[in-house]
Length: 434
Image (cartoon, rainbow, N blue to C red; front, side, top):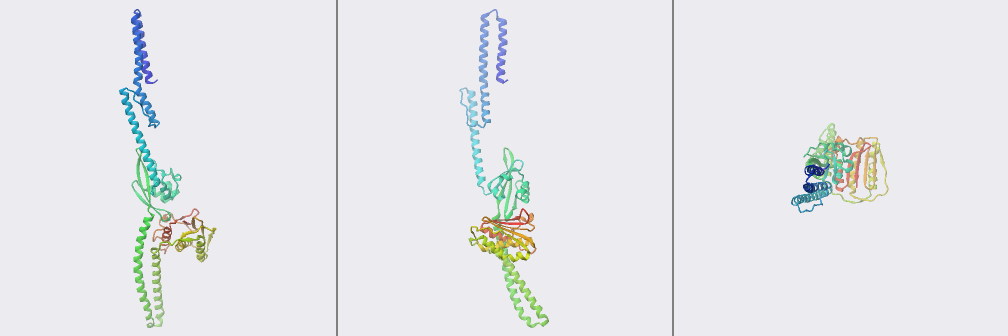
């Protein structure tokens, strides 16, 4: 039973009791009895009217609460002419106006934020209250090369199965307010920063991802370019002078005895050969620094790959490595610098041969969008994956660490995407996207 019904029942009951008492007391004086009974009836009517008037604000509050619960911030109440009621109605209408303005403001800000996130070149990974991935903006999907649907609901540590174990662990280990530079496939570098924001009064985390590849490449190239130029200048000056002296020393061979002359000339020849090897060694470093901008011309990729494989056929035969080259049909020409791309692909194939050693297979696949070179070697350990395109880093015993750096610079100058990693079935896989 509602409060209103209880009050009306109480009024009816108390007036009924008083009416019964009046009948008992005034039953001999009918005139007074009629007057008293009429007064009781009038009192009940007035009491019910007052109860109704008293409960109008409560009805108003209940109706307003229902409208707010239904998120209806457009309906307002009219004033009824009662000062108390009109004051309550004015307060309610002001509150509704304020709520409607705040709601509209929040909707506009949310819409504006969505537009910013969608257009932002920086990747943003939003986490839920449990630290699981809630959403990725388009830039984050591109940087991590995953779709938002594939990672939604996963913890940062679980992302390793999708984007790489090392990357997933590195993202999960970033503390709040901290940042980390991550190494991705293809020599790409990614700066990840973690921070918090508040949602409904509780903190939630997010990751800000920034592409640093080009900035770091430019910085690296400037640093190793300066180092190589300085070394090349000093070594070439020394090699030239020492070579000239050694060549002059040959003239003194006639002054030596027969038993010493041959050893003397042989020692001079060995020293001169070593100097020339040193000069060639430094020239190999200098090639990376002197790499000119690509001279792009329409090129038949099928013919280019045919010629490269024909050039390297003796190396394949010597190592007993089988070539799996499925020559495609005619493809549209691609604008590129033929000499530079040939140099890059020769470097990749040499790396594949050295990875196999002997008795293996190299598969080459080409279509209008990409070129894939896959070998049957041991693959690439995950711990060196991010260092492959770093200048002077090499897994070879006598490697200079500039082969893949040169490949990276050539393909980056062409604007071609590329990656190097372990294939699903084992072995290394180098992919170039045109």
